Length: 336
Image 1 (cartoon, rainbow, N blue to C red):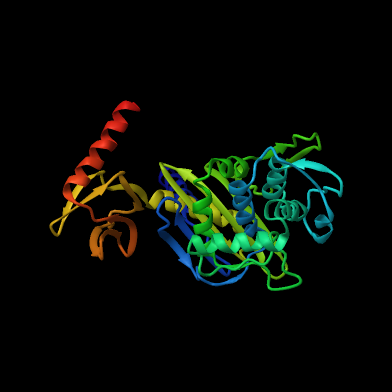
Image 2: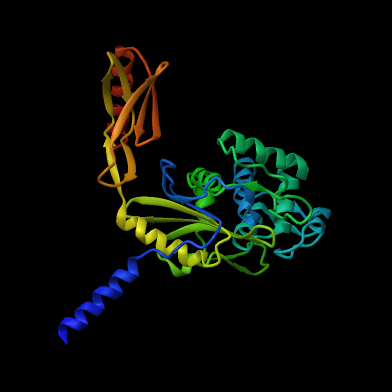
């Protein structure tokens, strides 16, 4: 009887860590620090991405606006339909409230108001979105509006891979992280409390943010980020009916399988007779098979893990390299 009970417990424990089968169009799991892909399926499939494109809307606003700026709502809110935060023409609301309405409640009216006031008009704001996409190397991506609506055209088109790269970039911004990590937000203008549609924040203790999306054309889209054991991972899924369950199970599988590995401590390295300075410890999320290689391309040394180039160092003279390294060490000493 005891043996049978132990066997049942073992079977249940194995089931608890087994990742749910992916039933959708595409997905990717990405290390948010190095942007290396840990698991994927059709990650470069391009389609309408619905409201997860508001991640770009948010970061453009954060980088170009002031959270305390107060906007007067205009006709632009009448051009938005679908999900909204119910702001009206003539209302006055600050950018901080609008960003929370955008990311927690997926407000299309908030998106249009942000776009008009940050960009001057909505088309100019969309130009800013596409320019940022080019800067980040999002080659699968093109934006046509700040909302993600796609009833009148093809909508904002991207891939799971590009949306993960975008989330990786945004996760370096503390204002963005603060907004998307909140389960709820009380409006500063006294207009009530908004609750986050990303239910993984409540259901999975390691989730630190994300964005939901849905249109009839795109179906369900979801971006989330989770941190555990010093690893920060991003999962993006397209057209996955059980997306929240899949994200949680896939996170647990990856956190169990992979680890954050120190591949090169900071210091001066000699390669092919040249001196190179690595000014920070280099980490990589991988497993026991992870190997580091080097390639010299033009005037740079590139550090590769598997097929991924994770760091590039410009070639310098030996004396200059040594001086820069000592400056870094002295800075760390005086800054504690």
